[in-house]
Image (tube, rainbow over all chains, first blue to last red; front, side, top):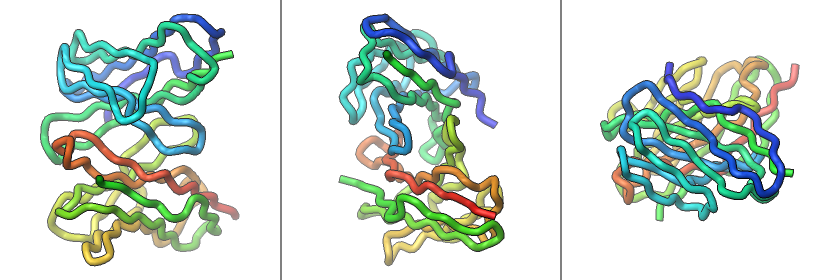
Length: 113
Length: 115
């Protein structure tokens, strides 16, 4: 059973607000990921990190930013939320081995009004 | 570039019937392949994975998948579907260009189960 947590699970917020989506894992994994998923659609990688102080943009352009100050914590921030940011955000982590599994958190469903 | 195709967007089966979900990948070398399941409003849970060895892989919840190199396929099967299997199923391949650290996902297949 993977120990990866996301808060909040659901968030409804107005346009222009700054928000931070939290993601934490207790497995000591170096690699962490953020995906964006619209309802019933595929996953798109928007950010990833291979360790502390390492962050990279993913395949899908995103206005969000991330930080990795601690191994277990990988928050995602939107400075000014817009309705186009309405989506589900999934966090994942993975160990160092080439055969290691990518484990997913339960997701945060964000609605921007 | 690598890609994953799940040809079936929606599938409906009767409870107790057998199931096969299709997945095709484009990749030159031996791929690392995964099947995940996502229940509504939840994250993804790994069902099974293939890296090497036996091409028939057993997973959780009674699922299995078979790697067929000649067909570039990794189809997911279950002999008898339960109502609780209704969910979205994603096939994924490890991204060689990223040292296998990233996954490339298919668009998913939504499975409905009727009594």
